[in-house]
Length: 112
Image (cartoon, rainbow, N blue to C red; front, side):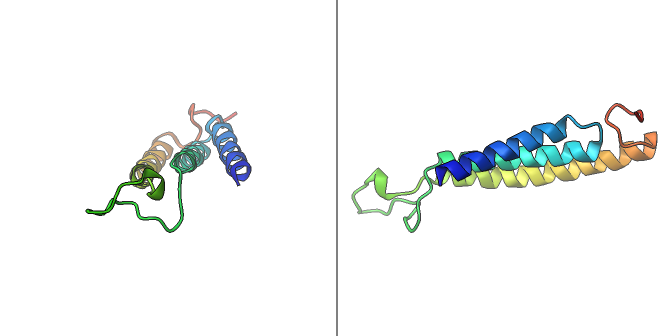
């Protein structure tokens, strides 16, 4: 399972970087999205996800760190998803404004 996750993160990162280097702004936005998804998967992978274990320590129960899941990666990824959505919306508005002003959607402003 770790190999599949590592390959998925690698493919998403490679595709995101490739799209970031493209000349059109829409492709750059999609590349940023793929990179953010790859980082979210990486954080989840490093967060030691466990199934059917509580994320919070209950009072009066002896604390065994191996019996609990770490809630910090989940909170970080949730925050990253919200920030990524807002950033994507901002980039799309800037894309539309730039295309309206220049008449092209190329990053450098000229057709090649």
